[in-house]
Image (tube, rainbow, N blue to C red; front, side, top):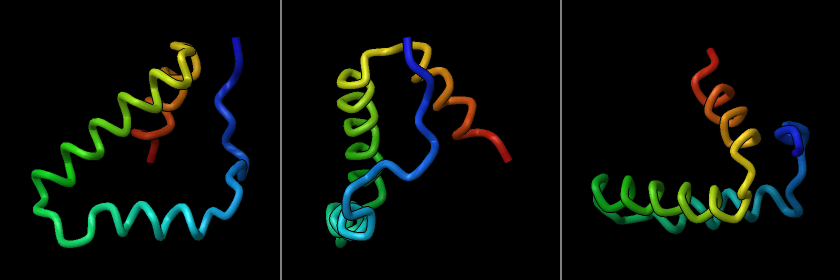
Length: 63
């Protein structure tokens, strides 16, 4: 089992963010929400570690 990586870990984070924004550009909110939900499920499946995913849930709702 692993722990959630919270330090910067992306190659080209600015490019990733731009690509993510472009994915949603011009789409209605409902469609963007559906895309986000699909991305979460795809990446959760790729991660495959429930402990890491639970840590991510906790971090996502932390103030």
